[in-house]
Image 1 (cartoon, one colour):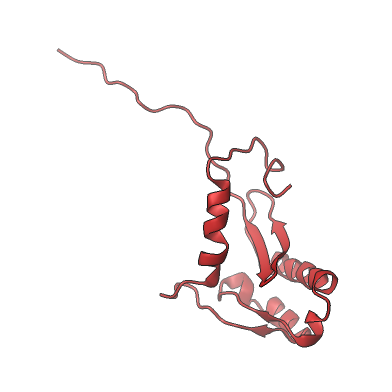
Image 2 (tube, rainbow, N blue to C red):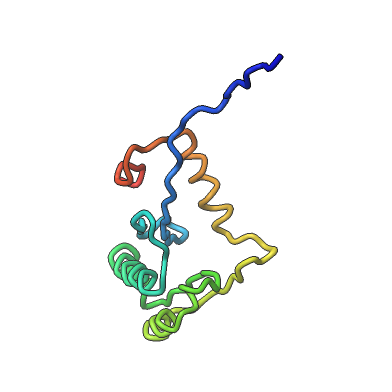
Length: 134
C-alpha cells in the first residue's frame, strides 16, 4: 500500500543579500555604505567609499588625517586595483595588510561581525530600505 509522502517544507521568503562597506576605528563606526541589491563591489565603488571615509574622518575625527591613516583590508580585487593604489598613494594612507584566506582571523571577525550577527538575529525586513541601518 502506497503511503502519501508528507510535505514538511513551508514557503518562506528567501533572505536578500546586502553588501555593506564598513569602516571603524577605536571610537566606533565612521561611515557605512550599503550597496544596492544585486551589485558587487568594484574598484570605482570602493574608491567612492574611501572618498566618503576621508570626508567622514575630516568631520568626525579632527586631526586624524594630519596624523596619518592606517587602513587594513585584504587583497581582494577591488582593494588591489590600480585605481585604489593610486588613491592610497595620493593621500599617503598606509596599508596594514591582511591576506585573504589567511589562517589568522581578521579583527573584524571578532569586533564587528559577531555583534552584528547577534543584533540582526531574528529580524526580518520587508524592503531593502527597511533595515536597522535607517
